[in-house]
Image (cartoon, rainbow, N blue to C red):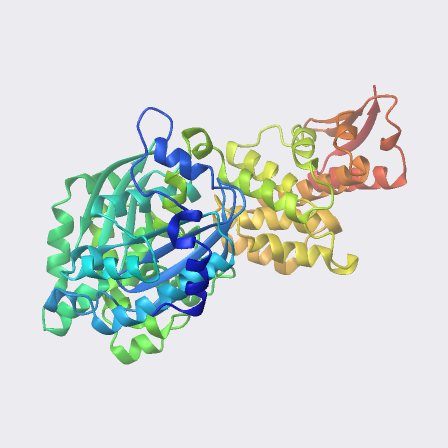
Length: 531
């Protein structure tokens, strides 16, 4: 029976269609999303919900914010194990079905209570393969009135790749998404999804085989070897998606005492990680229970997921592995975007939305980005986008007590729900945010930044950028047009702030001191030049 919330939702017309159902399907070729995707795009940028009915868990995520960089504001998961026993019986786990139906009723009600503008619900491998999968879907259609799309293996692979591309817009390599019932593999590059494959190598299925005394390593190796295009990943990047592989990353970070314990964007050498996975695959049950940073409910999947990851690395031979927190759910939203919106930088879109929400003076970001353009003449494309993002979020700590702004700005930006960032990029932005308030960087922050991979020049540049933003906010007094009256010119010997002669905002002791601090960090001489 549906929950009270679900009944309220039905009374509001939620299931009847007053809330849009976001389509799940391939976007049209030719540059623009198809008619269905266009209709869905009307709802993106507003509050939307995605219900994911997986082989091991079901989950509701509600997003809001920028269409290109939506932020999850609600995330609830229930481990139902729908696919447990499927290999032997060919049917969904009966207990899991009862649990799933009860909680899906709550999910529908919760989404309606949050007044979402659109909803997409989909099911993956277990429901797709089970003999009673259609009956399960029909039961959900009746109560709580939920329309569920059963994804094909190709759908699931494509959407998983889209989720990775949403977070890493220049992704090149192989996306591997390990769910409870299947492994999806996709080759991506040039902003396109290329070859795809789906394999019956989920941990639930492999655990059943191992429980029956089968040796699964050979079967995994054989299935992967038959995918000839995996060789194209040699020397490239493997993007690892899925809760089971995220659990491995958590253990890896804990055992290596990483300062930043965030999955998204965590990188490791592929060969080293394959050796680590081999050790996990050989752990006893008691040994797995003693592992740090891992959920009890994920322990049973560790051994099988480690076997699959190790074999995949050995066969595809990537140089590095990057863990991605976004997958099919985010891929649903990404697929609904038109091509122009897809090509927007998710970091800059997300930073702009973040600044609009948390900064005092909106609209200063683009002006600060233009104003600081001459500060680093040789900056790379990646560093330029980090600088532009830092300009958008430069005043996110203003609401805190002045004595704590630098520390809180560091914490807030280091862990902000921003997309398109690896760990060094996060640390760079957080250092700049801290220096924007204090002019300096505390030693513990530098230590964490170095642990992510930032070098001494990177740390210096982050501090200089923060000091420039500190100066810029002082000059602008909340007015973007004031910054248009000046520009930085940097040479090997000096840093000149070129100012229009009538610009009185650039005179004063605080301006001189902060310009001097910036030049001192860059180890060059400052000069204020009136034109």
